[in-house]
Image 1 (cartoon, rainbow, N blue to C red):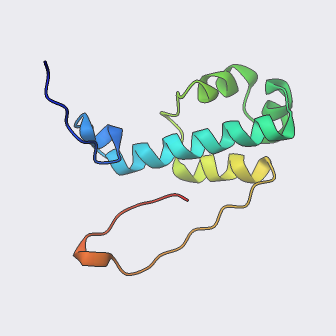
Image 2 (cartoon, rainbow, N blue to C red; image 1 turned 120 degrees about the vertical axis):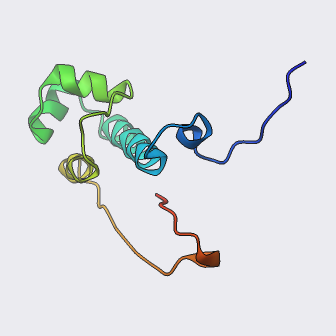
Length: 102
């Protein structure tokens, strides 16, 4: 039987990928883009028209293929889908800074 290891909360860090905080943020933003599309009941073609990218790229993004997209561009996609993006900063607790999306 294999031993279980508790997750850090960031699967990208758990598997040792570099820039894991950014990858986690992109994954969460992509999830929120998908949820906004569902809530607005938009087709991929309608999303393409709103965001300015073509339908095949929308399809890839919705399947979790967010490489090549900056955080800023994902923020703009959310704005195009009538979603507010609120960025806040505050002093780190316990001397360890982190990136979270709520």
